[in-house]
Length: 339
Image 1 (cartoon, one colour):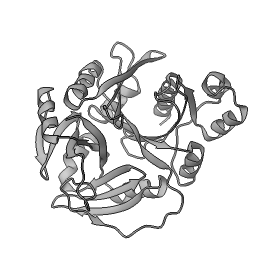
Image 2: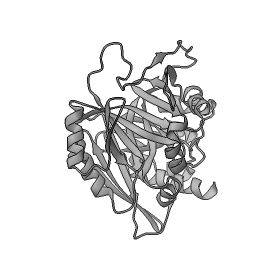
Image 3: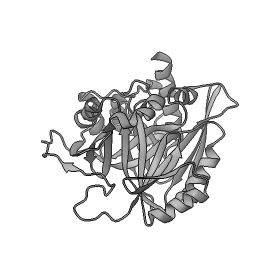
Image 4: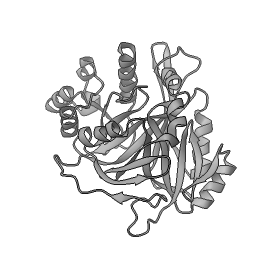
């Protein structure tokens, strides 16, 4: 019954051509297949183990009107989709219906979860009920850098974190992994990380502290008309090379103040050469009891500024790094105030 993995992330967009071009040209994804339905058309993109579906058409305008371009579906593979649907109902699911023969349940805000079988029949790309037509192979200009989807970050309304953490536990077998409270000036953010029993699906749930001043998460909730998926984090093996290539292809990343790198010892054992490389690439560095964590965050390429992307490299680290969580919050806040 428990969730095994995130099969794909589906982006609803008003401009499929531009959205696909960003993932292919800027982030190095490959176009694998097309699907055309009565009221929408989709493109399947892949890199490493990550699958993205980019969809446009009249059938998705209600989502776009409310939320703008953004992730609308995080599809789960389950040992038993029907049993997972029953658990979701028992956990208080707000919506349970079907699409293309699959169960679809509510997640958060306008985001749903399509429940798919863990075993994919031979010859099928996604086994999601769509008719996928393979594309001609595209030439690879640079090596694939992204290996898998490390985690997704979900922005929720203040005061709802515990409810959603319990929902994902009761409905899909996730468990609480860690929690963090970040206070910056008069603002504050609370977070809970939940993870599937398989370890292959991780959600970072974040919410503003309603007792504090309004900040970037409140702005997100306004722009998105409620909760939504804030960012996708892609795991890479060489973040310096990945960031350099992405920048050359036009990806804009959030800036990190020089002062962040002036106290590196606790984050990276004082390796001067490594710190110099991280400073030049504007990559955040932190560590936990298992090892090091390197992260960098893009600016949103979408009009409502509600979805962005992360590149992350883990050198033994299993967590998210307190210093990096604060640095991300501060970077997004600087970007919000200057944009």
